[in-house]
Length: 309
Length: 62
Image (cartoon, rainbow over all chains, first blue to last red; front, side, top):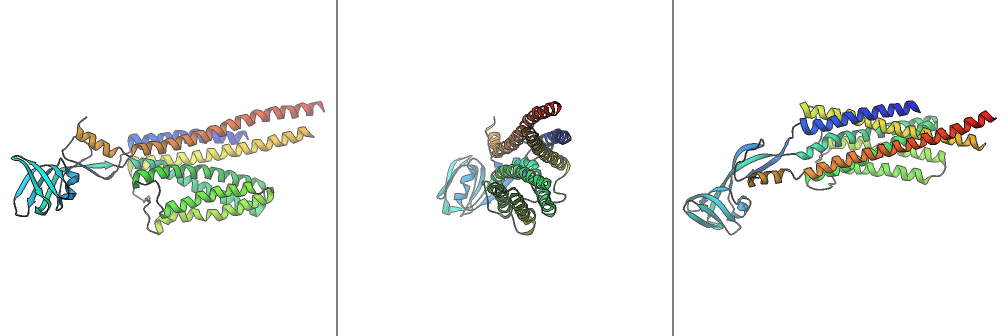
């Protein structure tokens, strides 16, 4: 029991140090990729500055987004006006030119070219990925261990494997919960919605329901032997969803990003790998802590039995 | 702050509450779960020590 707790504490400290290091690396060392762009009327000093932009628009109503920008308007008679756009709607647009305000009605507009500055829009939501992906990976790995122990239990009927399988499922539940929580917030940051029924999210949601159903099933069976057998069979069947959820983004069209070889480099890759190793250590620590707790409870029961004799 | 710069920041910082929320949930979840497990482990260890001492005393008496 002591060796279990020692292993757990070593893994806990290692995992804590590594995940903290990965967190600092992700925020202080790794850069932020661009996710689209931001446009402004005037240029400001910013490391995100990409350069000037110009865009030609041929309908007055689309110019409403560019009030305050410098524009060059060409009328249907070929005459040209340059100035700052002060208003624009579907009926007309107004320019402040050097010689005063000019209003052009929509049918008389041939084209308008907007001039401004463009900046890379930092994808801060990508920072969630450094921990969301490792947490999701650990949920898959621990579930694989649970399925392995379930098979071993069904082969040997050794109760130790049932305990290991149940504890593995508990750890899976923790990591599945953290994956869902971080994933929902990433979805909102990246896609602007809290949820989308796309393949990865749908299959992972099914996985979450299966893990919850496992505990509902176990708690609904009173007989210990039947509870262990049902739990083992259910966790093996539920595990089928893990490879489906993992590979589905590679097999059918999905909005969910996929990490590809060479997709990450330098500080981003190192922070990500450190976060993965740290999360493996934390997953192992949590498993060992829970196993230690189960073994302590068994020894307490044994001691009570001895005292009751 | 320059109004244009303010506009750039207002556009690019909209994701921060979600990033902070994700890390907050992640760390809080981990710390609470591990903290509760350690607390239970400590209580069980103390309980076991008392019981084992009682078993040892009884064995000595017999």
